[in-house]
Length: 204
Image (cartoon, rainbow, N blue to C red; front, side, top):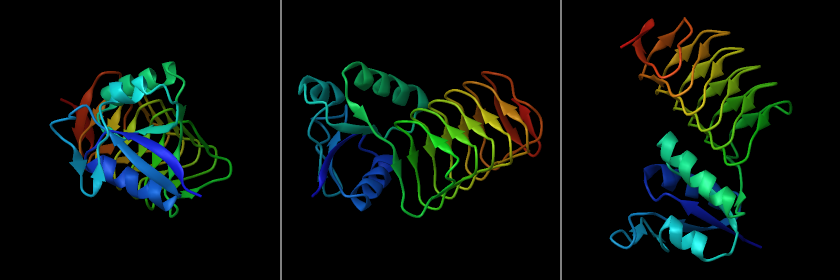
């Protein structure tokens, strides 16, 4: 028996989330604020805006598939306030320790590894083939991009973004609202609200 799932955000990221959802047995219903100028993504119809979804007053299961951390936070908050069932999606090929904790609304993509005693917050994206080592803390609405490697005990703050292919040394703290550029090597703590990139990563 299939289960209904609303996906908020019809973009490239949304396509991958929909693929995961269908592999897990969900029937996908897209909602996107570009509706009605945008009515379809690939073969999936878009049924309305996020506001239209809320107005249905039918709190079905939902996941927010928006890459922008700030907007994802806003949409998740709205849906939670309206009693929607915010679910977590984990690709079947991801490897998740029995001792890891993954909060509601997170999405874990194909080939990702989340090791023992790591914690992933609400609405996080753990993208394709990312490695989250033991005791890492990924705060709410962070995005860990494809092929990122976080060594043990790394903390990534609220709504921070770690760019594709980056590496972070053990026990490093990346603050809130940070942007780590693609391919960076982070060997020193990064304060809140900083953009840093390079090898080693430095503030810009």
